Image (tube, rainbow, N blue to C red):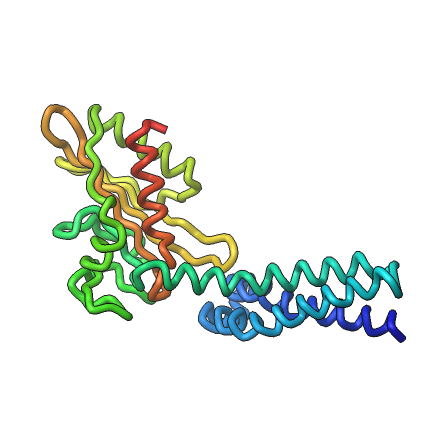
Length: 250
């Protein structure tokens, strides 16, 4: 009887863990909308936490009464616990970052999303920096300035062609896919996309290079999510990572 209970508890603990784990791939495969996937993940968080505790108790019991099931109970406890931690950590990231999804180094003339505008999206390609940021009394631009004051234009020594090659290499190293590469009389503009592994969220990433004084090049960047109101800080991290690579020549 004890063996049956331990087995049942262990297997049941895997159900909410599986639900959380599949919430993203299901959205990527079109089985449900990404919002439904997020709702599924949140709904399964508390059951997963309870299941993790129950499975761990089953693990302890199995050490004395059914040692052959100890490994299964431990795996179930770890899986349920890890799954339950995901929405908790995501909520912490949401609370730790401004409720925005568009980051730029140039508030007055943000690099435009042109090629990326043709793809399916819920957030418009235009920069809406003067609009109120949700859950705040600041505008979108003010919320960025307040949270990420270090994100600003970068000046890099070198001719524009060499800096453009460095930018392409940085995008490639970061796993971003270049979808447009245009050169005008006064600028080089690179458009790329980043696709998240779990949910398949796509963010547009635009790099604009313009000549600066003394033969240097000004680097402006913009990163915007195509869906979702909050990016949990992902766009800011990506912009910072790119600018660091450009500054360090890596």
